[in-house]
Image 1 (cartoon, one colour):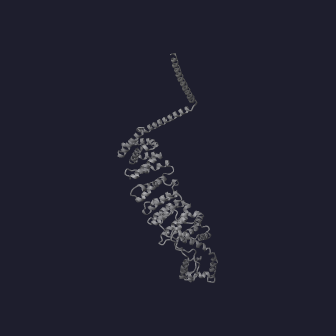
Image 2 (image 1 turned 120 degrees about the horizontal axis):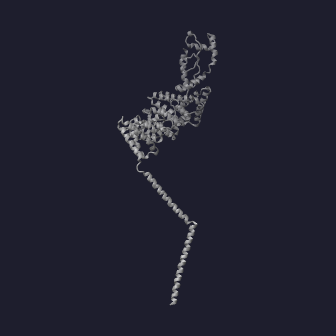
Image 3 (image 1 turned 45 degrees about the vertical axis):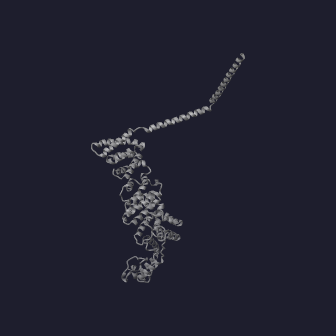
Length: 552
């Protein structure tokens, strides 16, 4: 048919109705249709009368161009070629297409992305977006796809590794100037209902580009992804199961996997809860994959570093998500290398805080069963210490944990033996409230031990029984009451000091009182009288001596 010979790279009108091909191939049909004087005048005139209604094809041109730029990067044409005379040979049609493509100047490749942003013509971008919005006023999806296509076409700079780990978390969006950022934000703000599809479009287009040997840089799509998730981070977590399936389907292509993980992970830098959902839903399932585990842990570390306040992440992680992390952090010879395991172990305390949540007093009893089942006598020492410490915390903070332990006791005798021994060794530093609450639990264990002794004889049961007896001795005997003795001594010393201070205060007050003044005056009078008496006695004595000498 003629359409096959001369329509490569062109748009043409397909005529309605069946035509007789006896005059030859379709190549002779088109000129006849366009000439009113040809044979079959009635049909041709009808065809001509309908011809002026075809100019709206220009709308399809931009639609075609929009999808062509997004899905097929090789074609850089922005409008379809104009209609050519049908009497041209196929070779001339191909030559015309070639000459048209050569007229489109390809953007220059820049040495760095910073230079590419500086060279970006924001005015031209505005013009292209205005044209797109004029031609498709009710199709915002075309607007945002044109935006992504334009940015990706013009931000031509060498592509670095897919995770951009050597840059800040908001790279490359942080390179956008104020004017460009305003254009991007303004357009995205007008297309809110289409943003989930636009996000998926950017991710899948990036993956298609990675399939090409000469794939273009992906900076434009990265900028759009970050711009979307900065305002609406929840978009990244709306289809996590589908993205996990996609991730597993390309697991043998690490670059694609890392690209998916990077795109979804951008949500976490603006919302901790969404970042945790992405990490638990996408990265934790592939944590054992050697090519992906390094980025997964590095992302988690950066996420917790950006969000120092962990309260906004409460309620996302539960026992189902927490205990695989505990195993990765403490179990030796797992899928993680020793360096990555050590890195994860440094993050473990904050992960534990996130898991226990805002109200540990009502949630920790749900963690006790998994802690207890892992606390076997042969588990690694580091893990054993962590498990015993965590179980003690559960018993101290959540009273319901004691009831859970009583229910699990008979099926976890070795683990219970370890926990009882730990409580016995740390009895003196346990909170008084826990020591009091343990009395009923230990008594319950004693009764259970007696009931099981007739049917089960094992070393674990004997150990548990001995430990329960020792704990009861601690509870009842409580040893010499040094604390009470010390309290009595302190009270006595305080009383003595108070009495001494009060005594000195009373004496000092009496010294300044009126009675004291009177007493002091009385003492002076007495002293004067005493002195007078002494003088009087001396005078009498002298007078007596003088009288005696006169008589003689």
